[in-house]
Length: 348
Ligand SMILES: Nc1ccn([C@@H]2O[C@H](COP(=O)(O)O)[C@@H](O)[C@H]2O)c(=O)n1
Ligand SMILES: O=P(O)(O)OC[C@H](O)CO
Image (cartoon, rainbow, N blue to C red; front, side):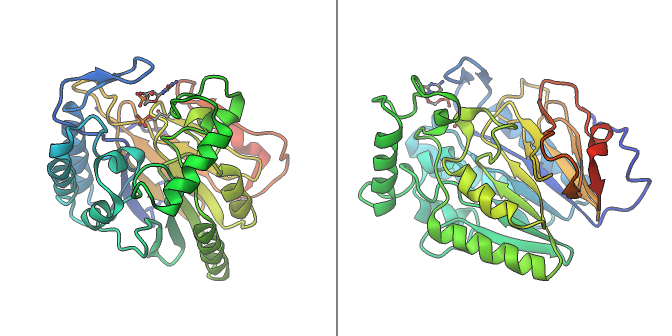
């Protein structure tokens, strides 16, 4: 295990703040298995990955930690859900500082929102799980609730469940609404394990970004579901990623969007110069390997130091795009190179 080095652009500067990141822990006290597409999943080992992450984050005296959702897997036996969620939350609470959680589909397979959100320390109105925080005056973090409109997590007769089911009936012809067969390209996101950001949350986002702009803050958006098709598999995207990105693109203050859910990870810079980084899943680490990291925040860039499967990434912030038609994209399997490609952007 080791953090990748070689980022020369920080020139030994001290970061404004540093925070730990991990996604898709998906713990369950069950034997190893596979995803629908056959990718191995190590349900018990993932707890060890989280424990090593905590050790590293505490050793490095990071300022806070963000968990990108799905702390417990849907295959966790339901009579163990509460114990399993508490077990993982207790692990996170060994961090010597604040931990910010967000919800994912697997959290919602295990517990309803009214039980889940207090455990995750998400104080909410109407059981919604979006919020923002500002660890330093220069930066604002916005955590979105990607399952605001969803067929999972709300009571069966809740208006949001009914709305989501109607939406899926309209968009996905398959009887198994998790099956993307017959859907083409970006339409393949219309699956039950995804969801949407509702109207009220979009208005809230607009207001937060307006406020951040007035305060001259840079914004990092965090959401379990990815927001950019260039970084993500079509099957993992937020249903209304385009609506959310339309709001985000109205504000030059949004610099980076971080996500989980698409376990292989990904990265892109969109046509507005916003970085999108999807974190590789902890669940898919074979025993002895890891997928966690930490991010150093500077005035002009974010530097992600990943371990093993979680790849390192330098994200240079931009104020304007000289050539908006040129989008830099590569999958997590491709060679990682960012800074040298960013000559088309003017750095802050
Ligand atoms: N290509 C796919 C992917 C998934 N499904 C359905 O989703 C469920 C969950 O998938 P996982 O990747 O988390 O295992 C799975 O049980 C399938 O119902 C699918 O149909 N086609
Ligand atoms: O974490 P899961 O099981 O919901 O899987 C999500 C898929 O990777 C999205 O493509």
